[in-house]
Length: 322
Length: 246
Image (cartoon, rainbow over all chains, first blue to last red):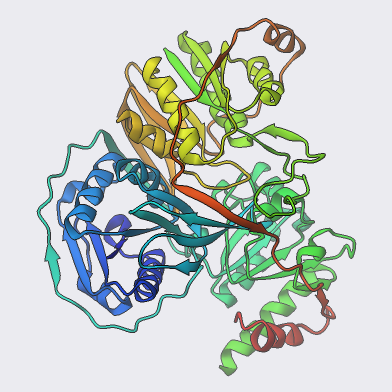
C-alpha cells in the first residue's frame, strides 16, 4: 500500500497535501496497489474529502495533541500506522512539517528516503523504485533508486497538480498511542492574506531597481492583478525595504512557481539558486546585460516604472476578457 | 554546555555543476569548496555566541576526507574549540547521519546544531535522522534560539509564518537565516585554529538504502524571448498561449 501523510497545518489541508495524494494515487496505480491517506490530529474540514484526490481509504488518528507538530510524536504515530496497514511506500510533502519528520521516519522504519522528489522514473511492485529530484538548487537532476522494503518520498511543491478524480470516502478512526510531546508550541504567527511563497503558483518579485520602498505600489498592483504572491531579493530584505519572509534566493526561501516575474533584479547566482525551479521566468530590467536574462524565458528591457504599470493594465484587460 | 555543530562541505555557490562521464558522481575537478553556508553563518555562529555567553565547549564535526580539513580549520577560526573529522566519504544522508549519531551517542551534547539543508543536495534529511537515532527532539528551520536554564525558546519558520516553541535540553536543531549573523574569522582566530585539537575518528559501516542511478543537467534554456516594452499585451498573450501559465 502507498500511504500518504496528509498534513493539516492549523487544521486545514493545503495544496501540498492534495498534491501528495494525487502523486501517491498515481504511484499506487503504477505499482498496482491501493493508496491511503493518514491524517494526524483534528481537522476543521471533512477528511473524507481526500478521497476525491485518489485516497481509497482515509485514516485518522484524531488525538488533538498531534495538531501541534512534535516530530518525535508524529513519527512514532506514522510509523505505527504504516505498520498496521502494511505500507510499502510512504509519501510526505516536502514542507517544513514533512522535512521535520521524513528523516526520522526513515531511521525508524529502516527505509530509504529521497526528499524533494519531482517525479517517478521507474516503479516496480517488488524491489526498487527510481525517483528524480532537482539538486544543486535546480542546476541538475538526480535519479535515485530506493531498494529497501519500505520506501519514503517527500514530494516537492508544485511538482504535480492536484486532480480530483475520485469521490469522498468514510473516515476510519485509528487508535494509536500518542507519546507525550517534548516540543511545546507557544505561539504561531502567520502572515495573513496572500498564499505563502512556497505554495504560490505566481510570484512577482522585485529588487534594488525599485530604488525606494515607497515605490512598491506598482509591484503590489501587478501581484494583485495576477493573484500572485510578492517576493524580493536579498539586498531589499537586508535593507529592510521589505519583510524577511519575502526574501527568495539561496539563503531565503526556495520557490518553484509556474510563473516568476522578476522586476529590477540583476539575477545574482545566489538569487537564481532560489528560483531556478520556476517553470517560466519573466525578467524586467533596464540593463540588457543583467545576468538574469540568461535564465529567463521572456525578457523586457525597459524602465520598470513604465513597464510594470503597462503590464498590470494588460493583465487586467486579459482577465476581464476571460 | 556542550554544543556540537555538524558542518558539511559543499561546492561554492558559483561553482559550475558537472558530472563524471558515467553520470554517477559530481565532477569536483577545479571546484572550490566552502563550508555549507547554513552550517557556517547560522548554526556555527549561534553555537559560538551561546558558548561565549554561557560558557562551555563548541565541537565542530565533519564527515569527510582529509581534504576537508581546510573547511574544518575555518570552523575553528570562527570560534569552535575543537573539531572532529569522521574519516569517510559522505555517500548519503543516511550514512552521514549515522556517523554523527554514533559520535554523539558516545559523547553526549546539550544541543546538536546543523544548517537547515546543504546547498548541493538540498535534502534537509540529516538533522531529523540524527535526532531519531538519538531519540531526541528535533526543531527544523530555527531562525532564533535563546536559552534560559535548561529550556530553549526557538522560533522556527513554517509555511507562511513562524512558530514559537519551547524545548528542554538536549535536542537537535537545524538553523535557517536569522539565527545569527555571518562572522568573518579574524587573524587571531585563524592563528589559534592551527593549534586547536582536531580528532580523527573512524566511521561505522552503514548499509546504503538509496543508490544514485544518474545525474543529468536539465535541458538548457532555449534563450530569452525579448518583448518590446511598449507591447505588454503581447507578453500577456505569450504567457497565456505559449507558456500557458496564466
